Image 1 (cartoon, one colour):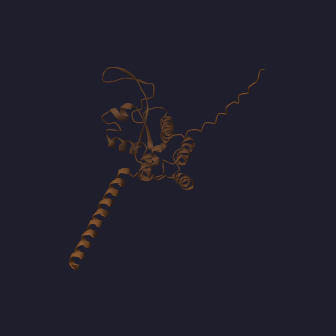
Image 2: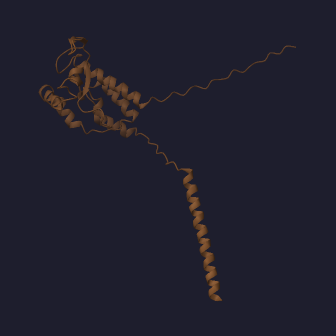
Length: 214
């Protein structure tokens, strides 16, 4: 006799979507910020005027195709400072004016200040006024709001960011300190030693009391 054996198909559990890392979100925001800063300047260096794609000859006599960078006026390394994603905190510059020239923005702070005060005082005073702004940039809801604003606004709305932070506060899980097992072993040994010493003291006391009675 032949028997038909029906094999039940295993149902696959739906895979859980992995949470997007904060570093991935921040890198995306920096890319959007950089593109916006360079686009505002027409992909040209705001300091020397050279444009993206222009050919220039470097000190070694090599022909180089110009690239354009976006430079932060207030450092992007300041913790929880939303200016790092604010277009008004950026300037479009070529690599020479950005980092490598003697008077570049990375090497000579007065260059930055003089250029801003002369050509874009509104950006200078905007950064001065807002360089102490702080929001929780580990909060993904805040970062999502920053991305929305980057796509539609000329500069960030800090009050809106703070409102989002207040409405959707980030839950911080405090880890309990790890206790090393040997620590308790040592404590137990010390406790046992103390208990033994106390017993010895009791015995000595009993001996003294008995001898005094005699």
